Image (cartoon, rainbow, N blue to C red):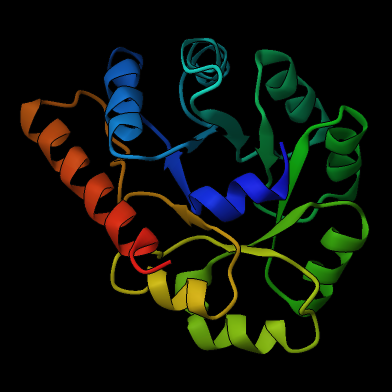
Length: 210
């Protein structure tokens, strides 16, 4: 993958804690509503199988990545399962280097200026700013001052009310969790209707007047 794909699609939909029987319909709904980047967190049951199966099913149409990758071993497992990009919740230099040695796109999580610079200097292609919602848009603007060269992905607390502002502040893409996909097992018909509406609305907000 290349950074241009994140610049184009902007939304990384985070899938966490769902039941395996709901996976295919969730992915299909996201795809139909324009979402092209999906992160499956590794603390989700059967995460590696989900990554493998959805990568094959949506090959050439969606990019499936692995999130909550805590160490090099988990990174290798995710890559072998077919993850096209890997996200970490914090800065682990050896994990970043492992991902890059395997030729896979890396998005390391960081918060402080020191962490952000360490992640980027050690090869993270994008840096996930987490928790972005708690820190606010002004924090991202402050970070852009000394680090205009570092592309960022604000994550945590991103919703339709602040997504556009984070992008205007300089974010390359956005990590979006329950504002699109609820982390619950056993989706019902109402849940899928809600998922479609959330995905459609988020896509419209992020891509309007590009």
